[in-house]
Image (cartoon, rainbow, N blue to C red):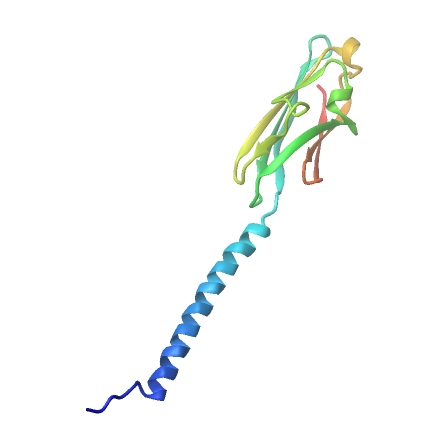
Amino acid sequence: MRRRGISPVIATVILVAVAIAVAIAVAFWMTGIVGLFTGFEQLQITSAYAEGDEANGWTITVEVKNTGTAAASIDNIFINGKPISSYTGVTVSPDVTSATVSVNPGETKTFTITIQPKGTSGFSSGQSVEIKIHTAGGKEYPKLVVLP
């Protein structure tokens, strides 16, 4: 009785096929890992407008959309270069001064900034107000609004 192993040609073909399969699996795995580390935040202010008057105060509505591939954490809002918490008579909802507000990819968030009448806040009708959204990633997104 004669025992025979597989021929060297067949063994080589099997080894090459296994190596190619492993290489393809590693390539797909690496693509997934690279995708995780290359996500980015990109906010876009889609709408910003002010309503109200000097006697009753103003309401500024700002809509922010995340067009990036990673969630963005909004940690502050600046008005004319100063943090919103440094103003008296100015509030924001949702409140970014106590906790960050997360905006997921594709999601839109609406921020409502309430400014008390002139005597309390120091703002007046016809004044240009720069609203700047600041994220935990260090990016800033400005928008100019004129108080009616």
